Amino acid sequence: MSDENPINAGPVLQARNLTRAVRTDDRSHTIIDDFSYEFNSGNIYTIVGPSGAGKSSLLRLFNRLDEKTGGEVRFRGQPAESYPVTELRRRIALLFQEPYLFAGTVADNLIYCCKDRKKADPQFTAHYLGLVGLDPALAERSPEKLSVGQKQRVALARILVQEPEILLLDEPTSALDPGAARTIEELITKLNQELQLTIIMVTHNFRQALRLEGASLVVINGRLIESGISKDIFERPANEITRRFVNGELR
Amino acid sequence: MIDTGFPQVAIAVSLMVLAIILARWQRVGTEKEMAIGTVRSFVQLIAVGYALDFIFNLENIFAILGTLMIMVVVGSYTAARRAPKIPGVWIISFVAILAGSVATLGLMLAVGIISAKAQYLIPLGGMTVGNSMNCSALVMERLHSDITCNRLAVETALSLGKSWRESVHTFFTKAVKAGMMQMLNFFKVVGIVQLPGAMTGMILAGASPLKAVFIQIIVGYMLTAAVTVTGLTAAHLSIRRMFTPAQQLKI
Image (spheres, chains in turn yellow, brown):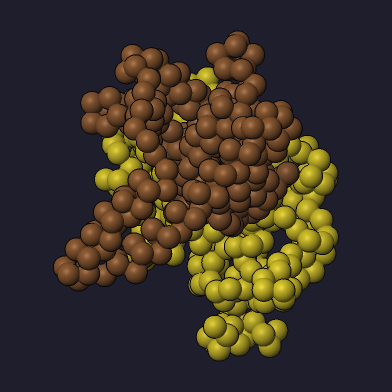
């Protein structure tokens, strides 16, 4: 970290005692339980845990798709609530597990958020398709004709058009075959390095966290169990709960 | 005009009896419902007939407004039952139906097409409220089902920094169109496939067909205007209630 480089200047996103509880059938159910962590700019983080641990809910709290019931989220030192929510969601962008592309062409999807652009120019679409490793010729294709992996990459390119500062990825490879999953992982590393994007990715697969290197956070039952360098956490788990998770005893 | 009263109704009942016998003979299975319907409609309509006779003789504007208000309340309650999961649905349909009815009846009163008499306000009010009720029920039901079935599409738009209004725009227009479709279809076939109610009534009561046609045209335009106002109001209010102030989908 250096002082001259504002990109790496300390935490870009902070969660303090973050809590979310929902009421269902008159019973309160805690989804995120007193979660605190500081995400530094320009790093890759993986949030790892079994299904239903609250990992995706965390991402939804970070970009305010859901509302917290306690604690706070700070973005660049300011409370998340101090930003217009539409701006916050553009700067802290979320890629869903299941990519949803709007009707039209791939190019239409890429310019979905560009107010002043009636029609995508080929250079523009080629640039963003190239960024996610897709053939520029796909621009005029209908999204229905794409594979799931391609759809996921178009959805990612659509987000990159907005130049986000933090990229939240919700199990982006869960619907893909191992080969396509690896390609996405390589893409994530490349985006982090080339665009200095802060990436927070959710996965239930700790091996994926190891492949991406960087830091990991183990979340189980909405609680942060431990955090640190992925290698340290998963190769020789010291924490008993993490060890049980790595051994597949937690489902 | 032909004489109508209880003896004529008694004769008409024989037609229902004949229909019930036919249904029973052919084992359609509707005879019980038909029998109940015969009695029920008789009692209901006779009661309404006496009540309206009473109100018409009063010629009191408060009695007329009170009657119209009862129609709006019952209409909004009936419409609300079609989309019970929208928060505050009863109030939404009440405001929507009231807006449609007040706007159109008010305008017709203001420009002097009708005068503030029970003879005009009650039947036209009944038609306006009835059509507005169907429209608001359709709009709210459609909106709720479209948005819940397309959560991912809506949340994808939100997560890309679109406003709540933009994120459901497609569903908004579809729902309002669905609510107005009955009126729009009516215009296509009016007078060709079916002679509409108001016109039929006037012709039966001895008015000239041309006069009946003029009234029918006025009624048709009035109902379309009412349905448009109601549909738009119901859609706007319903959508607003489906989001939190921080633009999070809450249904």
